[in-house]
Amino acid sequence: MKEVLADIDRWSAEGKRVAVARVVGTEGSSPRMPGATMVVSDAGEVAGSVSGGCVEAAVVTEALDVLAGEGTPRLCTFGYSDDEAFAVGLTCGGTIRVLVEPLEW
Amino acid sequence: MPGMFDALAAALRAEESVALVEVVEGPEDLFARKLVVRPDAEPVVLGSLGDADLDRVVSRDALGELAAGLSVTRHYGRHGEAREREVGVFIESFAPPPRMVIFGAVDFTAALARVAKVLGYHVTVCDARPVFATRARFPMADEVVVAWPDRHLADIGPSLGQRDAVCVLTHDPKFDVPAIVSALRTRVGYLGAMGSRRTTIARNARLRDAGVSATELDRIMAPIGLDIGARTPEETAVAICAEVIADRTGRTAPSLRDADGPIHRELVGDPHRPT
Image 1 (cartoon, rainbow over the protein chains, first blue to last red):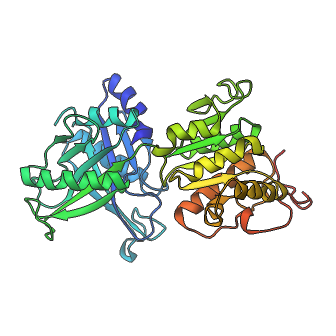
Image 2: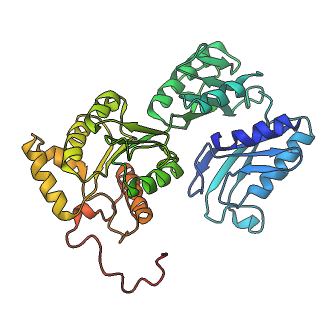
Image 3: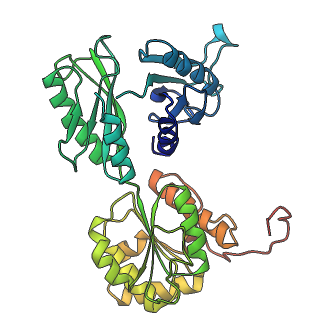
């Protein structure tokens, strides 16, 4: 969280809305620990990360969706499954849960 | 509740302990409700999870996790009942950064301070010689202190703990014996001292003369650093920081202390070494 404070400040000063995506749970092998944080502005700017680059693009989409809609927080689960070999997932075989919500608290 | 993020951000900037608590599993009406818990501020708890009893129990647990520096998910009943799993709460602890105190204002110190900053340490450089211990020479350090090592450790020693590190780079017995003796009286997690194998043997003899026991000598990583063939100040800094990490995590890694033979070997066969 600390490493993205400056970005949040800058975007807020520019009048932009911000969504926070935070890893709140992991199972198996995962690149980042719970607490890893990515922030996304409503202009599509990104700071921080929640994985090793595997699911960031999907999280940005979720974050922009949250900002564009009613701002309801959502829990996104990313993992590997044989059925969805081409879906967004972690190549390391683990699962991460990412909570995405507007920064309005 | 507006203002919770500002309180969290202020605590993070001030490097104060703070926990962010958020409901991540359970009833929809509780989902993403939060608490910000700050042991050093008033009020200690901001926000609500929607139930006074749940708030009380979770805040108490968050203070415990924060003291241990742990981030975990815990489960409760809707009113904070233990042994129930209706509500899953992610407690993220933000502890103040660990400290690295480096004694000796030498070239290796600047490189070590840089690498330690990359790893998130609060770095103090301490040397008794005002000519060398200057901000201009160590702009990357959080603090540059002109003091005798034992005096400085008498001041800050009680605040050092398992996550912290003391690195003695002076390799001058006049400075490093009192520094090590003082550091041994603290609960610091990592204590390393630089020097050749010859320096280390001579220093250990001086330390024994100063009353240091065999058990206490075992605490000292000397010669400091992992045995990875480091040569430059920067490579040595990586070897030291890697040893600090391995020491903390309890992993096996080849420390210089546990080998013998020359610390520096012929550079033949290392065409990729940056110059």
